[in-house]
Image 1: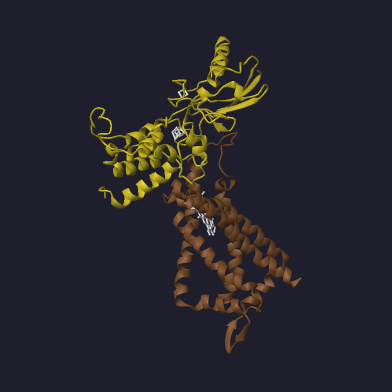
Image 2: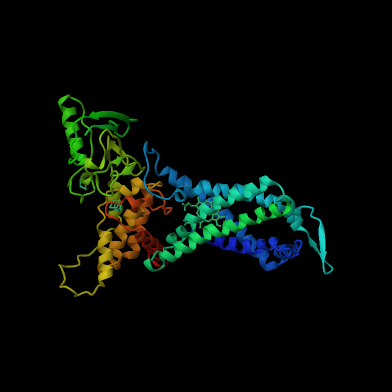
Length: 208
Length: 249
Ligand code: HEM
Ligand code: SF4
Ligand code: FES
């Protein structure tokens, strides 16, 4: 969980930097060039297969872990309020929110970019798929924007526990670094999903 | 004080069990939680009813026997053992729910009594030093930094009560096992067998049917001895190193 989770966290950072190109005021050129690069560069392609595998392992392991842990307590308590954070107790549900989002998200953009019929545009004589137009159209729908915002709140809570938890699982718990891990983890959990959510909100507002 | 007790009653391991309600009208705030049960049991006995079975031994917070899940928390609202919990921690007229520890590895024997021998088997799997290390050595004969000695001692204060398992949403025993592994791994006499110990104790822990840790921290928050989560991280390190380098193939 920890190793795959941390790899997914690194992916989030890379993905966010790319997506922020959407907010550039250039009619989508920077974003389209970036998207084309990400689907054609062989090194990135190899990494992307590693990423798909990581997601799969993380999800399958999450299911195995949840089932295993449920079995460890066949009879529950009638009255229970032992102290732990809400997110730490609901990682499975939070992860499922992210997973549902992921499926819709991949269908909307990733599938379209790879196999859908996307119009092309030309920059400096070179032809590019106009993924920007696809994104722009999707974010004109208020409910898609709402879906993104809700999912990113789910991701926020997933990472609020997950980031620190990964370090503990790897055995990294030392009074010297704990405050740093907790600080960076909380900041990451709040800022990264917030920026992801800001993109559809801003694009929606720009249109209306 | 007037107290309404909702207590889990279960005749034996095979019985389905259920809650039974008792009304107590004359509870002293200075009674310990177990004394309150003693008074109730006297009353039940005099009426010819089966008294409520519960575990206890030292009644001074050091043996770890007094397992009870009180109002949603192991050992009740205070971070201490049930024998050290007093009725003044509750208010007049309160309803108190009392349940046994709930875990596959701690099956209910009767009422509030659970079988915690799974902990003993984990200790038997490696929670010891195999050779006689002699009498008490002269002070400072083996130099051990104060900080390390203190930490090993803190880990050694675990009384094996099982509150960590009871509190954990996964019924994981990692806090207990990590305290036992840490206490030995930090000191020279225990270091010799650290790899085998980590492998065997963790294997036994899994065998007993305890859950896997997801780092919620409920164990440490409810532990009467305030055993720290650092122990679990240390146990993870011990485990990875053992798996990578141990002589057992
Ligand atoms: C796609 C659906 C996902 C599911 C179903 C899922 C589910 C889970 C579950 C059940 C856990 C372990 C429970 C726990 O430790 O309390 C977990 C841990 C974690 N997840 Fe996810 N997750 C998903 C996506 C993600 C994503 C997108 C990221 C990061 C960007 C992520 C990062 C983490 C991290 C860092 C941990 C902690 C690892 C540890 O405690 O050792 N997860 N996830
Ligand atoms: S770690 Fe704490 S809660 Fe767990 S058995 Fe030891 S003393 Fe009890
Ligand atoms: S009876 Fe010994 S710790 Fe409570």
